[in-house]
Length: 253
Image (cartoon, rainbow, N blue to C red; front, side, top):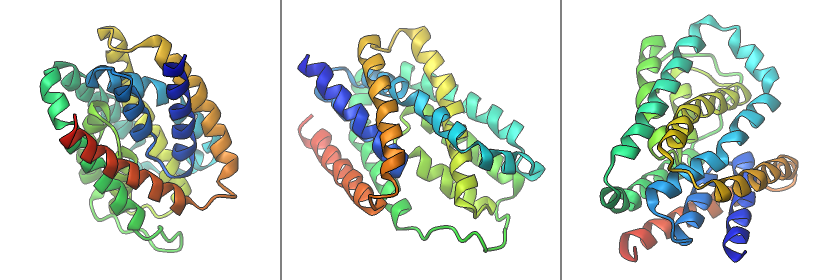
């Protein structure tokens, strides 16, 4: 019971922080590892646990999605296909990675994700009045989408910040549009990853189902909390967790 209570609490907290700032993967992945679950299985189960929340949040922002879907220069169809392919490739790469090797690179992955999250937190907010400058162009942003989707399927922590950065390079400045696109692309890449993890039998279903329920509840609660709690507090907490986990897995694994 204590095992599931810890996972439920981690998923609830992850739902809140994903709704407010992103970074919930840090909490669910860490909780599963702390429960003695092997890293690859923990990663697959964590992905499954947080998976429904992306589409739920994207549906909540469907008004912003209708705005961007009318912009042909974004090539949503092509980038969506790439997100699915990349997510599948990342998941297969994870499944083919020797367990000992993945365990050895976990500190590097967590450290990288923490650094990305820190940089993303320090970046200025997009100015909706700023004109669009398509620095990369449609081909560039499409090419960038593939490695991002692969990373999302392989590990995924910090993927939201990376996608937002790519969108800013493309020229998007409306944070609502950027966020709903981020949720869509992460959801699509995770769809392929989750399918691969299910087929490979790497998901612990009792743990995943408990975490899914509490993750959704946490996301709903976080949506209402967003108007009361400053996101900087959540971001600071996530960065501290990331630094702690990096040190923990690097020196005390």
